[in-house]
Image 1 (spheres, each protein chain N blue to C red):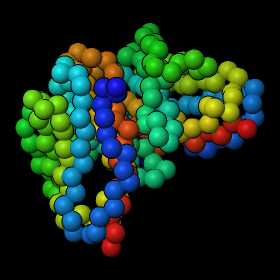
Image 2 (image 1 turned 180 degrees about the vertical axis):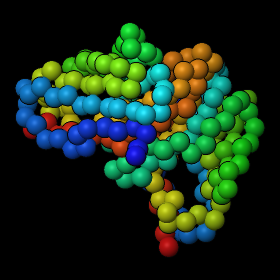
Image 3 (image 1 turned 60 degrees about the vertical axis):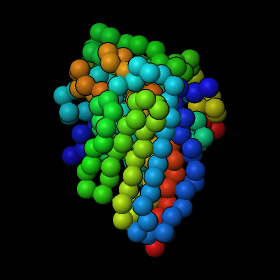
Image 4 (image 1 turned 180 degrees about the horizontal axis):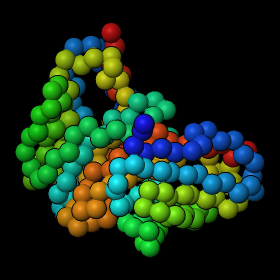
Length: 111
Length: 112
């Protein structure tokens, strides 16, 4: 079993929909959680960075962490075609040296 | 100018050739990483370095070597390229004591 599980999709939704992207993990030592967005043929770009449990909002994006369930989510409100990309979750424990990435979910927003 | 640059951006080579991929950064970060990305396999860590004198193997280091020439430069070498090293290669940096990594634009390598 992988430390971080992420449904690779693809996920296709109409413009304006609320999108929910999720990752589950098995290592209870993970404390820091990140979401990256990767456009086709580009490098991953850090989108959201959260510590421990709770919510963090940035514009149309909300990152949610539930450590009791070992589950993190990224919500995209009022989705736009420009949000079409692959979204990768990543996480790391306190003092650890390496990020652990999910496989990435490919998302398409249809106009 | 981009904070993390990679050269070349695209490279086609033949089996058995030696290849070097270069990464430079202007972010002033101590930590640097090399990943490869393959469809269906996500990002896999090849090597990482926390400073000029520190080099560590990642999960898939066989067939690769690295050199940290300066704080700002981290090179990845394939001593004798083979076709299953065809992939997207990314360099990333991270501030010392931080966790968030910042990626370069990638190098698309094809080994024939």
